[in-house]
Image 1 (cartoon, one colour):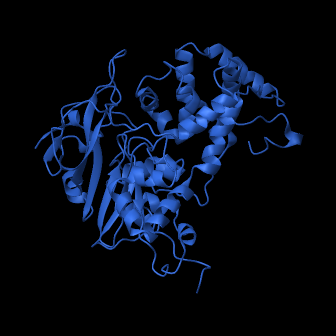
Image 2 (spheres, chains in turn brown, cyan):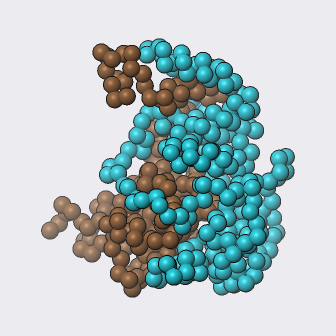
Image 3 (tube, chains in turn brown, purple):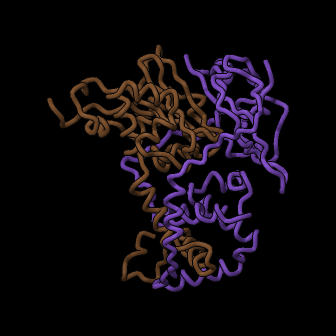
Length: 208
Length: 227
């Protein structure tokens, strides 16, 4: 299969899924049911524009602006919309604040619900059977595997997105990030920290 | 439905494997399927409310567990298109063969800049789930509730098995949203209050619960009874 693009092996075909998708797309285009540029636009939107950089900006704003953070916790959707984000699979977003005493993490046990406007499309591990099965029954074990060892004194709250509300975690601001500007802070905020399976990263390459 | 998709609390799935620097789509076809599904999802009558999810859940369990995420999307899209007579199984098979046999196959193109604009708008537009229908919530924050145990809907439901029969506490009232469970064809989803219910891990998992854990599940009112 890996030879699919080699000119010398032109008898080798693409994987079935790729062939089948071309068959589907060509038929639907010919029938006038979809347009090629709309498909291109959707792929481009989620590959380039709508992703965790949006959520990172929300988090960084909350770290530097206590009034914004307050609005974000109380009315997440509206506060996120202040930065221009919102839409499909995020018509209502609740933001969960991690503190030294409480750690939040998000899962969708039934499928793959995820706050698209702030995080983009979910990564494979989030959609995996293992994460969906285990996050609710052994979250600490899952977090340890993913490199986040929580003290037993920390309360763990797991949010199973079963309905129309989508959840995003507001990670704790890293120690040592006090002097950083908002844009630098945003670069510390990983996708996984906003799902709640990682901490926001330490500052690197900035200041001392 | 009591399906294989209802995974919460199951054992045996192994470690959670995370890929570093994972691309949004691993293969080009995944992005195309994502977009085709998103566009055809707007096609009137192709998927009734909850229909996409129910078709995913109805995939033969061994296939469900052994297929990738976008492979499942592709199966569901094909199945709906064929069932609704939009594409026949024969023409799909013939076209697949044609693509396989013609390495130089070029996708036909159709441009529709107005639709592109609509797509961009739709992706960025909020359609809030709230319905202003004057339905008063039966429960308030802090109320003790029990998830109903004696229901096993054969259609799509958002009530996971692992909470059925378990007692929890109303953590917050989300408002009144359209019900997403399967409803008879031709009927309209009735809005219901939706609650976030907090379950103590001990209530869900007994002795095997991890310390200081709770699980929060969003639930429509008809899933709940007072406890």
